Amino acid sequence: MGRSLSVTKSGDLEIVMTRSFDAPRTLVFDAWTKPELVRRWFGPHGCEVVECEIDLRVGGRWRYRLLHNGGREMVLQGVYQEISRPERLVSLETNEDCEASEGDALATLTLTEHGGVTTLTQVVRYGSKRIRDAVLESGMERGVGEGFDRLAEVVAVPARA
Image 1 (cartoon, rainbow, N blue to C red):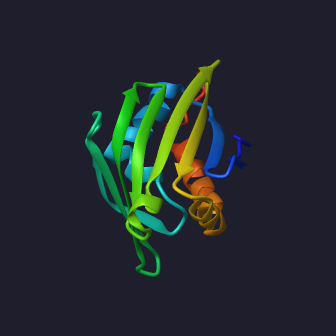
Image 2 (cartoon, rainbow, N blue to C red; image 1 turned 45 degrees about the horizontal axis):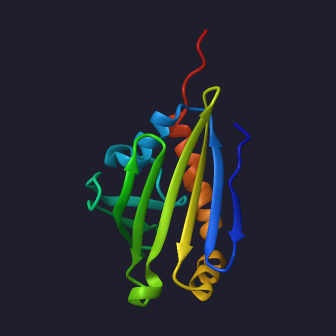
């Protein structure tokens, strides 16, 4: 363990998130794309995925509905633009809380594996610097970090004796 999330800005529109996992990338890819696994890790502590739909094909949609402890609901959704199993996923994500064009973000997930360790890099490109900065200020880094800690537990491969 001991792996942590790195979140950085790139240019005026992008957030780059990187985290390594002690697991093969096929397992990390599956945890990202199979509803029964997404439900086990997605979101921050105190948040439950109550709805998870994934149509894993180019043009297919995904939609997650999360409930926070206090009853607040959040819906995240997108459309797959590119799928290259198990190394890359690109989706156009929409947030119901933002204006249509500015609320769209292009998310590119890349998984690379070396020696049984998978490095996940997600680059999210927003429609404006204002939206990108608002996302960073929202506590997104803490929430994604907590979710990725849970993802690490879901994909953990027991050491062989």
